[in-house]
Image (cartoon, rainbow, N blue to C red):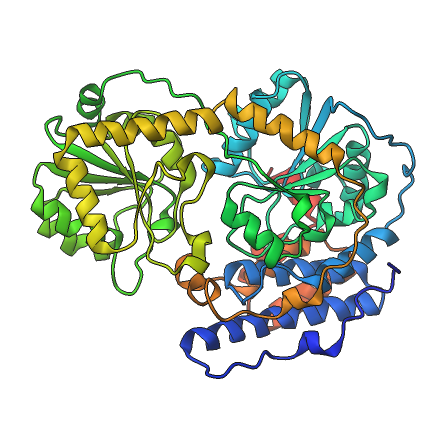
Length: 547
């Protein structure tokens, strides 16, 4: 591949032809046009030799695609361009790395790790489950404190945490630092955000670095990195399918690795946990735990509405949802059930609720597999509602230890029926909970999980070197059928293009930063002198002033 960047055929830029444009199709095509606008800006900047601005627009284009689904899960043009940019960034350390086996030093790379979230926990659990290696962590754009459990896990492993955006300079200086760190290790694992271009630029020339394994933690949305990954680690079968069909990852470069969860340590009985939480110990507790975004109402039906009928029929049951907050449109269902539906804010440590639960119900319409795995460790049976067509399996639960053990209802009537049986049949409740517990413990909890990790490392070592073959341009043609047609209803959320630009502009050199700042200011998107001054600061200085 040369360094001239993307030279795609004209057909890759055409609006797709569809027989009939309904509302969902029109929405996908409109989203694609917004994505296309930033891709074109990135390509234009690259063509004039402005690599910083090209990266800026590549990141904003990817962010647009992750927020509002535009019918694609990958971009051949952006990846081709980012590879070309990476090859133009001077690399004084090239040639000092030699391939090693067995892997002894692992560098995990993240973007920004939230205090509450499965990804942050998965990284610290991963490191803790691998005591025989030194595991370090590099963060490209982290803000705020690094969670204590992650700091402790890295320290106990003998590794270090490196915050690249605290170092003087811009993104290309951080690229060079990431390259330096990578060559001190035998293996690189990316846990990065979907739109993070920095590690892709750093590892554009795969032959000069240890193997790069990309954790497909956001398997349901657009992300960058398919052509840069020596191997993609998928957490479920549906993710592997999309990686191959819609992202262009070669089948042999996919590996199925279960999500890792902590071993269960029960500290009190169900009755004791209910009493500690102020819940009626005589009522059966239906529990759900997830981020607020996973409980959005769909087609006028709220998560509370989904459960109102079964709770009315079974007054001995109550529903507590940790993470949903208390949405206004839950009021009617709460009134119908005499207040036996409770929505609570997100909490970093919901263990007491897991200990109190009798039945675990998955979040809907956005599933939460990690919470289900945690719940079944306490013996709770698992129930999930899947109302989409088979082609939209990515919307459902199909994770290793949950296949065949989580009860999947494919209609509201089936859902009510299975919940009713679990409420009234204690033997069935125990049997279903125990089957899930055994399966998840075998695959998702160390040492069972650790065997999968070792197999993944061995598979990565056995693969031939990555040749960075450009992705097939066909993957960038928008699809308007399932799962894409329902995607935004379930996963999409509002975003502001100016707000996205504000996030990335601090990485730009001063001249380009001033240009973006001027555009935002003229358009009225800069609020007052304090924000105007803050936006002019380079990212590294902002992080030093306000980590």
